[in-house]
Amino acid sequence: MPELPEVETVRRGLQKWAVGRLVTRVEVLGPRTVRRHRGGPADFVARVTGRRFEDACRRGKYLWLPLDDGSCLVAHLGMSGQFLAVSPELADQPHLRARFSFTDGPPELRFLDQRTFGGLLVDETVQGEQGGTVPASIAHIALDPMDPNFDRGGFYAVLRRRRTGIKRALLDQSLISGIGNIYADEALWRARMHYARGSDTLRRQEVERLLDAVIDVLQAAIAAGGTSFDALYVAVNGESGWFDRSLEVYGREGEPCSRCGAAIRREAFMNRSSYRCPRCQRTPRQPRW
DNA sequence: CACACAGCCTGCTGGC
DNA sequence: TGCCAGCAGGCTGTGT
Image (cartoon, rainbow, N blue to C red; front, side):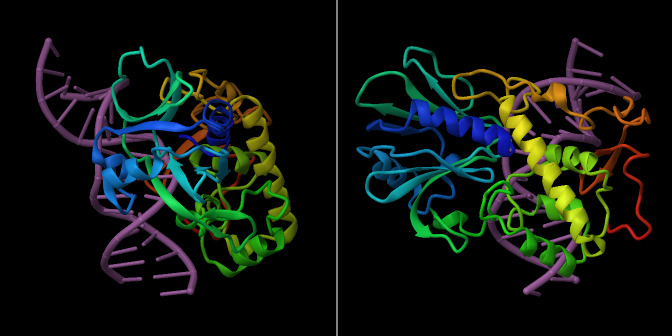
């Protein structure tokens, strides 16, 4: 559920609540959260304790906090990860996975994760092929679509070369980053494109239209503080976003399309649900499912 | 190399 | 009421 806009909202919260602070104590509750950290829980704790968070960065759905020794703390929220800045007095929540305390006192920073698809690790920083410095573990993730260095021509070329459906391509984080099931459906609706449209049949102009739609919906969602269906996704200060009220197709099966009035359909695709307007987003002649 | 998908995980919902 | 299947879904690993 956390896609680019939700992760960006969390990044801004970390900027405010974590950056500049010196870590005095790290607690990891349960090893699964740091399963992608090579050295295991004890090594993770040792590498973060005594370090200062110098910045809060994001690429796609990944977050990282550069540390003052050149390494960085990488975080992925998975399905249900949250960072919360709270008083140490507050009783431990269910699904609390990690806690960071600071030299300047409260609030402490907590990482919660119900479904445990998320995780934390300490990583080295490398020069990314696509520009900028990034954690080594996410060097394979493409730039955000709104990044000034995002290569639209290169993206188009890859789509033409591949033989897959356009939604699969949008969800491939090595091609374009930050898009998940919700915003893929929303962008395709805005671009009036069916999710099974063959990527190799797209014209350059259609790809431009689609990328414009992707950026529009992501930026509108960021402005709204992200999409919250329930308490599972909240910002670092605990507030909910309200973009769910702006969703045009996702979760709106049976409701009328705001453009043409046709009933929105939900269809099983890629072992999940896809929502589309059957009139604005016609099934292509040669669909690639 | 390109592509597709099972598996990981927990809590909620709906059917019986 | 209680049980359980189904669903939510990002990413990694693995198979074709």
